[in-house]
Length: 123
Image (cartoon, rainbow, N blue to C red; front, side):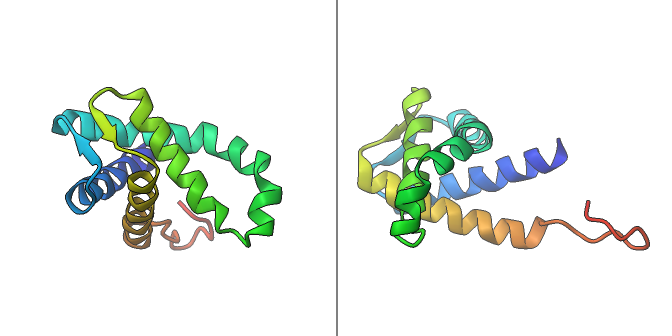
């Protein structure tokens, strides 16, 4: 549960940066921003794996670049589900997905799995 909260907060920071940098992404309030981060985390946990499997042939043909489109679709789905989270179209969703992915990657670098001393396992 702690990892989910850390990832949700990292996604919230990424969404906040995307809101600041990209015209076409906006939130009605901070509560909607946090809600969007949680919903995006749930979508990425449950919907995205199925979408990745279903789009595997096109992902292989495009050498993985289609995953950027898939990430934009997941962000757009979160915007569609939440009335206080607004995405103006494909390109804001695409650029927003890139920003959120970059911020989440940096967050994972800082808060990623740490090796437990003496146990030989990841936490």
